[in-house]
Image (tube, rainbow, N blue to C red; front, top):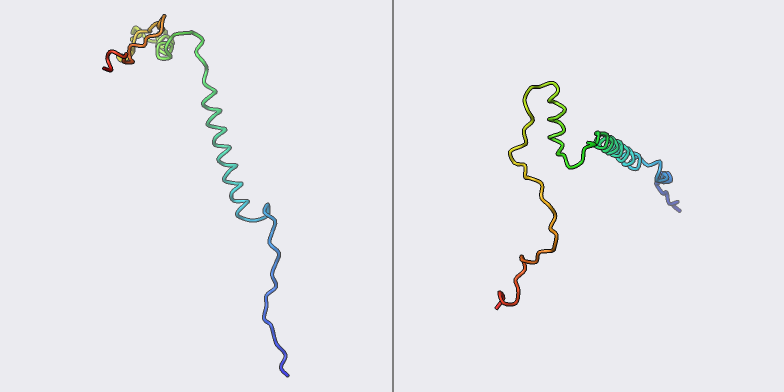
Length: 101
């Protein structure tokens, strides 16, 4: 009789997950993003903190610049005067029973 001939290609075993190309690409992207995030956070927190309390940062910068310039520092046009916290709670924004009738 006739012998049956099977055609087959040898199958290589699947690589472990840490050796697969897609895992290496993903880990590279994650590392690059983490480095960029660390650099951004480091730059954001490396600014000097103003020592004076209750003084706007713009006023501190104006005071630092007055040593070299002859103009007096001016407040920004949209600045509001400082306000005091309320001494007792105000519930006037809520309607009472008479107003709801």
